Amino acid sequence: MPPMIELAALTVDCADPGSLAEFYAAATGGELLRSDADSAWLGVAGAVWIFRRADGYQPPSWPSPEVPLQMHMEFYVEDVDAAEAELVALGATTAPEQADRARGLVVMLDPAGRPFCICARS
Image 1: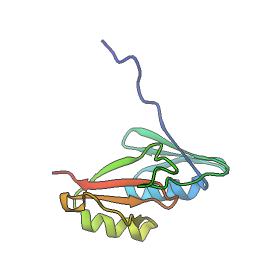
Image 2: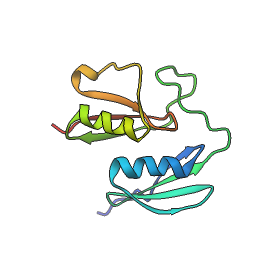
Image 3: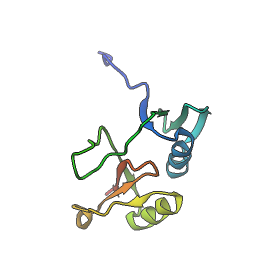
Image 4: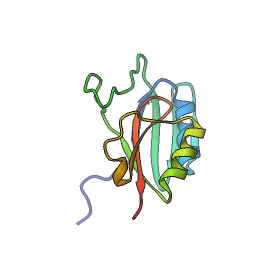
């Protein structure tokens, strides 16, 4: 039986769609499909990510629940330390709180302040 639903796209609200799409294109090797003042569409490993301008966007306040996460992404990397350095060079920051770093999970903040995690594939 085919699935009842199939993911069409992942939509991410942000203040600056173009720059956030450029960050994730560089980080994932994705391809910018289209971009205008209100949105940027990125093709990543067969999926579409849509970055959409949201007036008044506030980044999540993780780990505080004041502004909820809403959603976050987790990525496998070959070398956590090398990937962290490359992502910082692209504009990400390492989150100050790292509850699971000793187990190989690093929480990063993208240029819009949205948390995402990186961990080794193994």
